[in-house]
Image (cartoon, rainbow, N blue to C red):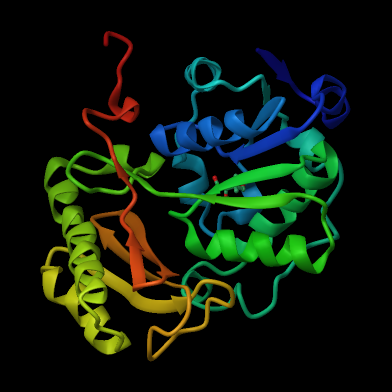
Length: 298
Ligand code: PAF
């Protein structure tokens, strides 16, 4: 396992088919499943670890983002990464970043209005990772459904020679979608947060029973959510364009964002077409407790 600090050094040690897993660290099983997917298909698996200031719209959120390089390197190595590329700010942004990547339209929906500049920050840093590391494939979680659509479209529009692979959500045993931010939830906030995945699972059942009306599908989620959560949106959106749908008639995802206390949670179910209709990707559930909560004594 190598830790690299510069793009040049990373390119030098990355041989054969290169799979890239971009992360901001504080790894959980969602990240580990990306590394494992990359491991199956690559000669060299590079995981990047960089908390990207460009994509944070609130300074407070950037300051409190959890960081632990030693922990992350150990987890990445155990999951099969060959290289952890952990650049400092000066390597990633040596000068004022005058060039920004904006994927018009796709960035403005869902998360867009609530997180101004977020997707421009994501697309810009991912474009730099693609240019600097030159991966054959790159792996992103379906948890960030809009991010996945934005990155796919950017790679397509800019003719970037990397295949963007989407990997299913990993959920805690009780259904809560894994996120590094889950460590901020109190017991009560976590309990309230479970209503989100319960609502999405209900909606997935409804779709698989034949429901196609977006209002009926989103209402199934709202019905499950109680008063403790402040919901920003529940929307059925086109997987490619992220535009809201009134009818489920193409590959889509049902996405939501809500606050539990001071923590913003997002979650979704993707619907992919098969010969019988639409199937909900409910993600993968952990059997036990996530590594997120592992302390030094465990
Ligand atoms: O999903 C994330 O962790 C980040 O948005 C990414 C893709 C690593 C870019 O900073």
